[in-house]
Image (cartoon, rainbow, N blue to C red; front, side):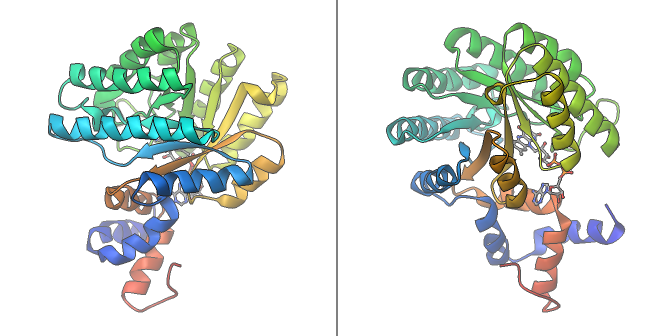
Length: 303
Ligand code: FDA
C-alpha cells in the first residue's frame, strides 16, 4: 500500500457517516432480512447463488448472541420458504465465541439443527487467529452431528495446509480465501505472491482429495490458478464453486457465470453495516480516496 493510500486509510474514521452509507449500499444488501432476500432473488435472476450473513461480530453480552442466533433462525426459515439457491455464513464470535466457547457451541447447534431440518447449508466464517483452532474444532463437531456444515481456511496463515488434513478427513466443504485480518509474520505469510501460491496449494490439495471447495477471491491470479487446477483434475462444475463479495468486481462475476461456473455471492445485511463497510474501504483505498476527495470537494462523487 502506498504512503498516500495509508494516509487515506487512516482518515477513514473521520469520513462522515452519510458518505460511508453511500458506499455501504454497494457492499451491504440493506438493514433487514427482506432486503437480503430481495438481493438474493436478483442475484438468482443473474444465475448466481448467495450466502446470507447477518452483520455483527465480537459481541460482548450473552443476550446479543441470542439475538444473533434468532436472526439466523429467521434467515434459515426465510431461505427454506423462498426456494432460492442460497445458504448462510456465520461469524462464530457473533454467536459467542469470544465470550464462551460453550455458548457459541449451543447457539451454533441450534442454527445447524434448524438448517439441517430445512436442507440449508451453514458455513462458519474464519475470523482472526485467536479463533482459528476453536472454529475448526467447532466445525468438525457440528459437521459430525448435523452434516450440513462447512468452514473457511485462510491462505495467509502458515498453518492452513496442515489444518486441511483434518478437514479432508472429515470430507468438509471448505471455502478458501486469502484472509482479511492483520496477523503477525510469525504465523502468517506477508508477501502477496506467496499468499497466492499458498491459495493455489490449498485448493489443489482439497480438490485432488475429491472434496468440495468454495474458491473465494476477486484476484485474477487466484482465479486463473483455480481454473488450471480444475482443468488438470478434469473436475465437473458440481465439484466446486467460486465465491465473491457483494459489490466487488461484478464484471468478473459475469465472466465466470457466463463460462458456466457455479458462483455464490456473499450477501451481508443488518444494522451493523458501518464496521463492515469501513473494513471494505480499508481494503480498497481507491474507493476511500474518492470519498475523501468528495468530502473535500476535490473530485467526483462515489455513486
Ligand atoms: P485482492 O485483495 O488482491 O483483490 C483482487 C481485486 O479485487 C483487486 O483489484 C481489489 O481492488 C478488488 N477487491 C478486493 N476486495 C475488494 C473490496 N472489498 N472492495 C473493492 N474491491 C475489492 N476473509 C477471512 O479472513 N475470513 C472469511 O471467512 C472470509 N470470507 C470471505 C468470503 C467471500 C465470499 C470472499 C470473496 C472473501 C472472504 N474473505 C474472508 C475475504 C478474503 O480473505 C480477502 O480478504 C478478500 O477476498 C480480498 O482478497 P482477494 O483474493 O479478492 O484479492
